[in-house]
Image (cartoon, rainbow, N blue to C red; front, top):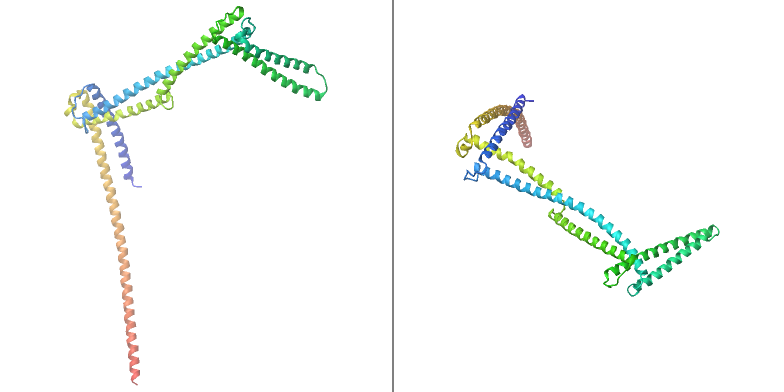
Length: 375
């Protein structure tokens, strides 16, 4: 392997390191200059490779980063509010469930008391009839279960009895549930109806309890509706996926990309400062303490240029050797072709001699024929 290629690779490695060192210096200088410019607008030209164009790009990135940061803050506030709303909704749903359960229990007791309360026959008459039917069915099933339990008999009778008892228990539970629902319906009807009828004793107490529980449940339900409406609004602001967290992740990634663009802007301005050597539009923003940075950057550039020249020289020498090798190959090819031509010429001469001898032989044979034809 050509050792000169290893030398080139070493130079390229050094050039890369020197370039990175120079870029760091100039990027730091560019950032410092931008800090000195602050909120001023000293450059009228905003296009091309000018300080004004660099400053415009820098401020555009700043503005985009600030806007994105504000969006993230808003989304973070939404996340906190959403978490708070979820806790309130969870607590409210637990409270709502408790009130619903308590209200059902109060309704059942109230309904039973209402059907027993004197003077309410006109209001609760139809419910009373249904109660009597259900109580009769319950009593019938309880009596049937008692009779079946007292029955004797063999194994076959035992299996039959168990099947009947299972059916009777199912019917009993069904009718008991229906009776509970009837009591609840009676109470709900009485509470919602404006009958104006006065209650006394335990029925009055349970009626008051029912109204209190109903109002409390309505208040909790109303609060839950408002909380869920607010939650839907927040989720609606979060886009299609309904997740502020995912949107925050997306915006944080965008800010990271923006921040990744600042070093290139710093380098552009620092490079302009180095090219102008402190003159031109940037002169008023370059201080004495920057001279050392500019000098180091200049030395880096000289080293880079020297190494690039060395690489060009080595590459030229390699190219010369490659061309010389190609010339030698062509010369050898020409010599080979010339040998082939020489051999071909010798072969042609031999064939021409053979042709002449053949033609002479033909002439001799023709003369012989001619001479013998006269005789």
